[in-house]
Image 1 (cartoon, one colour):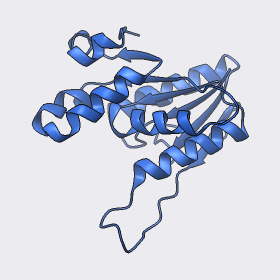
Image 2 (cartoon, helix red, strand yellow):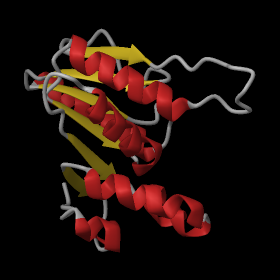
Image 3 (cartoon, helix red, strand yellow):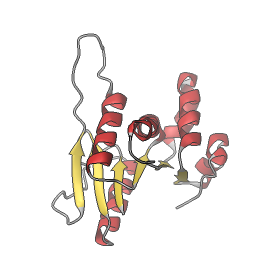
Length: 167
């Protein structure tokens, strides 16, 4: 398979899990395309079957903060079409799952499924800022598949609605 993986590339657990998963998939013969604003910290881009595609976020005077989610969606769609990806696998609900949903809509010639892996803080912290709840729930429910890193994350209402399983 040709799989696109998006994660936060820093030292956090979600990036480490995504990177380790991607490297194992590459060892098993899958093409794995990492799509992120920086090379994931544990990723060796020289590994066979591993490819890295940087998301470039431009500063534009109109925006106080660069719109990373939109740049990510565009880059996901571009990589998916250029490399005929079979699947997007995003780690962390916001903004990655909404970007994957946009990329799915942008892909012209075929259906591009995406899977969201919930790691915990991406959904439990939603309660501290209710403005993100509707979009988080929407993007998880629109995911073609969902996995959760813990039983408690799997039991949250929006996780159950997409039949979230444990890895």
